[in-house]
Image 1 (tube, rainbow, N blue to C red):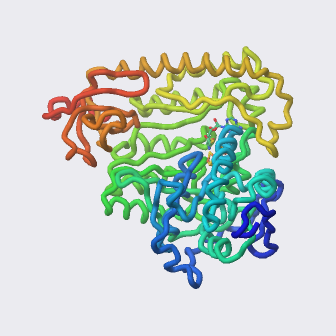
Image 2: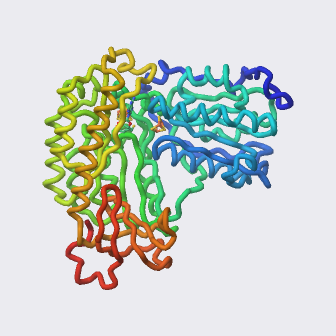
Length: 500
Ligand code: SAH
Ligand code: SF4
Ligand code: F3S
C-alpha cells in the first residue's frame, strides 16, 4: 500500500522492521539473565517531529496495558505530539490491544475496520496496533490480509522502539512490523505521561511463567522479569514527591517478584521497604495464590500505607478443574490460604477472578465454584466464560459444555456474588471510612466520589476543594456496587471505626 493509494496491497519491508511473532518461540524461557538497559535517545530527526500534531491512544485490557499506554504517550509527547480524543484530529492513532478473550480481540478488529474510511480521507494518518494481540501470529496475518490500512504493528517487548518504528512508518511506504517473541530486556527511564494525578501504576515485574493452560499472557508478555528493587523504590519516592496519593504495584503474579533476581529478595521485602515511603496508599495486583507466603502476610498485617485489600483470583473451586488449569493449588490449599490471611488481617477485603465453562466442567464441579464463593465471601468478583486461545493447551482439550450452559452458570454465579456483595456492603452501614476524594461523581457534578482503602467506590456531598485529599465518610446508604455517605466534620470521635 502506498500513502497515495491506501487500498493497494501494502508491501512489507524485509528489514529490521519486519519481525513477525512466533508463539512457539514465545513459549521458551531463556536462562540468560535479563539486562537492564536505559531508554535510548530519540533517533535523528524525531526530536520535534510531532510539533503541532496529535495522537490518540485506545487502550484495551488490563492495568499493565494501561501502564504501557502511559509509556507510549510519554514517548510521543517527548517527540512533541499532543493528546486528542478526536479521531479526525489525530495524526497518529494507536490501538494498545488485549488478547485475553475472543471478545477483546473482536472489539479491536471492529475498531480498526471503522477507521478505514478515515485513512482513505487522510492518507498521512499513521495507524498502529500494539500490545498483546500483535504477539499472536494469527493476528498479524489477519491484519496483513484484511486490514492493510494499518501502518505499524509492534509488540509488548518493542514499546521502547516506538520512535524508530514511527520514523520508518512515516518515511517509508511499507507496513512496519516489529514483534519480538522472546522477552526483551528491562528498559528503565522510559518517558511516562500518567493519566491520573493522584493514583499511579508502577510496574514491579513483567511477564508471567505460570502457564495456566487457558491463558495467553505468558506467550504475549514473555518470561518473568523483575525490576530492581532500587528502581521501584525510587519511582515510588518520586511519585510521593510529586503529590501522588496512591500507587498500584503491577505484575501478572506479583508474589513471584524477585525470584529471577540474583539477590535474595521477595515481594514481602519490597512491601516492607515501601511501607516506609511517604506515599499514603499502596495496592498491588495480581496475586497468585501459589506464591503467597507467610512473610508477605506478616508484612501486610503492619498496614499503614499497605491497604487491607487483596485481589486473589481462584478461577475454579474444584480441584480437578484447577489441575486441568495448571493453577498449582487445590481447593483446600486456596481455602487454607484465605483463612491464614483472614486470621492475620481480620478486616481484609478479598476480591477474585473466576472462569466458568472450562473444557469439560461438570455441573458438580461448577457447584464447587459456587460453594467456594459462598464460603470465602468475596466483596466482588470478575467473572468470565472460558474463551479458547489458540496455541494454549486448553484450546486442545475437548470442550463439551454447550454455550447455553456456560451462560446459565455465569448468570447463577452473578446472582450469588451480587447477593454477597450487597451483604458485605450493608454490613458497613453507619461505619466511618477513610476516603481518597478523586473527583466529581460521573453522574452528578454536585456529588464527589472517592475510594475507600479497600477500593470501594463511595459517593458523598462535599466541597470540590476536598478533591485530592483524604476525608472520613460515614456510610449512610450501601448498595451492591457502590456506597453512599456523608463527610464527617469531626471524625475524631469515630476514629475507632476508621480504616475499614
Ligand atoms: N495474572 C492474573 C490474571 C490475568 S488475566 C492472575 O493469574 O490472577 C485476568 C483474568 O482473565 C484471569 O484471572 C482469568 O480469570 C481470566 N482469563 C484468562 N484467560 C482466560 C480465558 N482464556 N478465558 C476466559 N477468561 C480468562
Ligand atoms: Fe495467565 Fe495464569 Fe499468568 Fe495469570 S498467572 S497471567 S492467569 S498464566
Ligand atoms: Fe490482555 Fe495482555 Fe493484559 S492479554 S489482560 S492486555 S497482559
